[in-house]
Length: 123
View 1 (cartoon, rainbow, N blue to C red):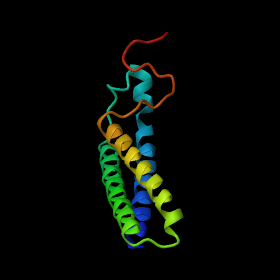
View 2 (cartoon, one colour):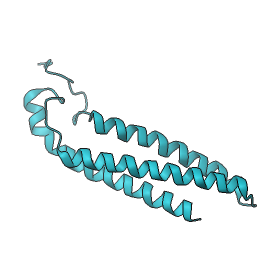
View 3 (tube, rainbow, N blue to C red):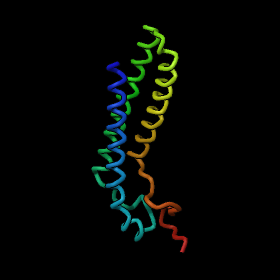
View 4 (cartoon, one colour):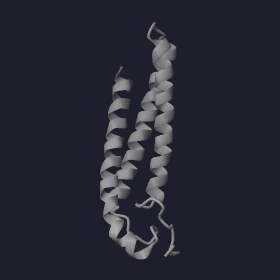
Protein backbone atom coordinates (compact mmCIF):
# COMPACT_ATOMS: atom_id res chain seq x y z
CA UNK A 1 0.00 0.00 0.00
CA UNK A 2 2.90 2.36 0.73
CA UNK A 3 4.32 1.73 -2.76
CA UNK A 4 1.01 2.73 -4.33
CA UNK A 5 0.87 5.90 -2.24
CA UNK A 6 4.44 6.82 -3.21
CA UNK A 7 3.66 6.18 -6.87
CA UNK A 8 0.56 8.39 -6.82
CA UNK A 9 2.31 11.23 -4.98
CA UNK A 10 5.42 11.20 -7.18
CA UNK A 11 3.39 10.97 -10.40
CA UNK A 12 1.18 13.86 -9.30
CA UNK A 13 4.21 15.94 -8.35
CA UNK A 14 5.79 15.22 -11.75
CA UNK A 15 2.65 16.38 -13.56
CA UNK A 16 2.65 19.54 -11.44
CA UNK A 17 6.30 20.16 -12.41
CA UNK A 18 5.36 19.80 -16.08
CA UNK A 19 2.51 22.28 -15.72
CA UNK A 20 4.81 24.80 -14.06
CA UNK A 21 7.50 24.25 -16.71
CA UNK A 22 5.01 24.79 -19.54
CA UNK A 23 3.91 28.03 -17.92
CA UNK A 24 7.51 29.23 -17.82
CA UNK A 25 8.18 27.95 -21.33
CA UNK A 26 5.49 30.22 -22.78
CA UNK A 27 7.63 33.24 -21.94
CA UNK A 28 9.80 32.43 -25.00
CA UNK A 29 7.04 33.24 -27.47
CA UNK A 30 8.07 36.84 -28.39
CA UNK A 31 11.64 35.74 -29.11
CA UNK A 32 10.41 32.79 -31.20
CA UNK A 33 8.22 35.10 -33.28
CA UNK A 34 11.21 37.32 -34.06
CA UNK A 35 13.75 34.66 -35.00
CA UNK A 36 11.55 31.98 -36.61
CA UNK A 37 13.69 29.33 -34.95
CA UNK A 38 12.88 27.66 -31.64
CA UNK A 39 16.42 26.39 -31.17
CA UNK A 40 17.75 29.97 -31.04
CA UNK A 41 15.32 31.07 -28.33
CA UNK A 42 16.72 30.84 -24.81
CA UNK A 43 15.21 28.17 -22.60
CA UNK A 44 14.70 29.38 -19.02
CA UNK A 45 16.84 27.46 -16.55
CA UNK A 46 13.80 26.71 -14.38
CA UNK A 47 12.14 24.92 -17.33
CA UNK A 48 15.08 22.53 -17.58
CA UNK A 49 15.20 22.12 -13.81
CA UNK A 50 11.48 21.37 -13.56
CA UNK A 51 11.61 18.92 -16.48
CA UNK A 52 14.60 17.18 -14.89
CA UNK A 53 12.79 17.03 -11.54
CA UNK A 54 9.73 15.60 -13.26
CA UNK A 55 11.89 12.95 -14.91
CA UNK A 56 13.33 11.95 -11.53
CA UNK A 57 9.90 11.87 -9.93
CA UNK A 58 8.59 9.68 -12.74
CA UNK A 59 11.54 7.35 -12.25
CA UNK A 60 10.61 7.09 -8.56
CA UNK A 61 6.98 6.42 -9.51
CA UNK A 62 8.04 3.68 -11.93
CA UNK A 63 10.27 2.10 -9.30
CA UNK A 64 7.51 2.12 -6.68
CA UNK A 65 5.02 0.64 -9.17
CA UNK A 66 7.53 -2.08 -9.97
CA UNK A 67 7.87 -2.81 -6.25
CA UNK A 68 4.08 -2.92 -5.98
CA UNK A 69 3.90 -5.42 -8.85
CA UNK A 70 6.46 -7.66 -7.14
CA UNK A 71 4.48 -7.49 -3.91
CA UNK A 72 1.23 -8.29 -5.71
CA UNK A 73 2.78 -11.36 -7.29
CA UNK A 74 4.48 -12.45 -4.09
CA UNK A 75 1.39 -12.04 -1.87
CA UNK A 76 -1.64 -12.64 -4.09
CA UNK A 77 -5.10 -11.70 -2.89
CA UNK A 78 -8.58 -11.44 -4.33
CA UNK A 79 -7.84 -7.85 -5.39
CA UNK A 80 -4.80 -8.89 -7.43
CA UNK A 81 -6.95 -9.63 -10.48
CA UNK A 82 -7.73 -5.91 -10.75
CA UNK A 83 -4.61 -4.44 -9.14
CA UNK A 84 -2.01 -6.18 -11.32
CA UNK A 85 -3.30 -4.91 -14.70
CA UNK A 86 -3.86 -1.40 -13.34
CA UNK A 87 -0.37 -1.33 -11.84
CA UNK A 88 1.15 -2.62 -15.08
CA UNK A 89 -0.63 0.07 -17.11
CA UNK A 90 0.51 2.71 -14.62
CA UNK A 91 4.09 1.43 -14.86
CA UNK A 92 4.10 1.59 -18.66
CA UNK A 93 2.52 5.07 -18.66
CA UNK A 94 5.02 6.32 -16.10
CA UNK A 95 8.01 4.98 -18.03
CA UNK A 96 6.81 6.40 -21.35
CA UNK A 97 6.04 9.74 -19.72
CA UNK A 98 9.50 9.67 -18.13
CA UNK A 99 11.17 9.19 -21.53
CA UNK A 100 9.12 12.07 -22.91
CA UNK A 101 10.16 14.26 -20.00
CA UNK A 102 13.79 13.38 -20.49
CA UNK A 103 13.58 14.20 -24.18
CA UNK A 104 11.89 17.53 -23.50
CA UNK A 105 14.63 18.38 -21.01
CA UNK A 106 17.26 17.86 -23.69
CA UNK A 107 15.38 19.41 -26.63
CA UNK A 108 12.24 21.45 -25.82
CA UNK A 109 9.47 21.59 -28.39
CA UNK A 110 8.51 24.82 -30.18
CA UNK A 111 5.82 26.90 -28.55
CA UNK A 112 3.58 27.52 -31.56
CA UNK A 113 1.91 24.86 -33.67
CA UNK A 114 3.01 24.70 -37.27
CA UNK A 115 6.21 26.46 -36.30
CA UNK A 116 9.13 26.42 -38.70
CA UNK A 117 11.90 24.69 -36.73
CA UNK A 118 14.87 26.72 -37.88
CA UNK A 119 15.32 30.05 -39.61
CA UNK A 120 13.56 29.24 -42.88
CA UNK A 121 10.60 31.55 -42.87
CA UNK A 122 7.49 30.54 -44.76
CA UNK A 123 6.75 34.21 -45.52
